[in-house]
Image 1 (cartoon, one colour):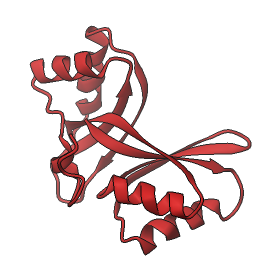
Image 2 (cartoon, one colour; image 1 turned 180 degrees about the vertical axis):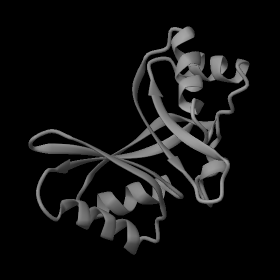
Image 3 (tube, helix red, strand yellow; image 1 turned 90 degrees about the vertical axis):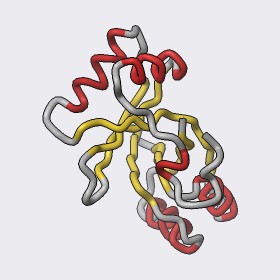
Image 4 (cartoon, one colour; image 1 turned 30 degrees about the vertical axis):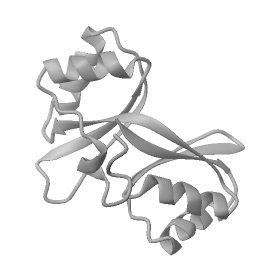
Amino acid sequence: MVEQVSVFLENEPGHLAELTRALAAAGINMRALVVADTAEFGVVRIICDRPRAAKEALEASGFGVTLTRVLAVQMPDRPGGLAQVVGVLSDAGVNIEYMYAFVEPGADAAVDIVRVDDPKRAAEALEDAGVRCLRAEDLYATEDAGSS
């Protein structure tokens, strides 16, 4: 399991820019970002190199922030890679609440960030199927590496 930074953000011009500036000023490097929005608010989900430092920096800038534990699943970066992961979770009866993915340049695998209703069962099913779940130290750069 890894930690994802979740930020509740008013859907107004400039707020996402303020958020990214606060992270830049704190020296936080984002690996993935996704925005799920409604008419008035959005939820920004971020995978970054130092999630706890990111939370502190964003809170100091006035943002509402939570850390959420999610699965980081390494999947082959080829057609059908995601289908394999989703199929394993489906066969195990695990419900996917949301997911997003990213590929790091030069890597031969993608990383799928998954929030599920039963993380333990999901991780066991994926490992049994030969799909690797990444740990914090696989994704983070420094101080948060021991939080898996």
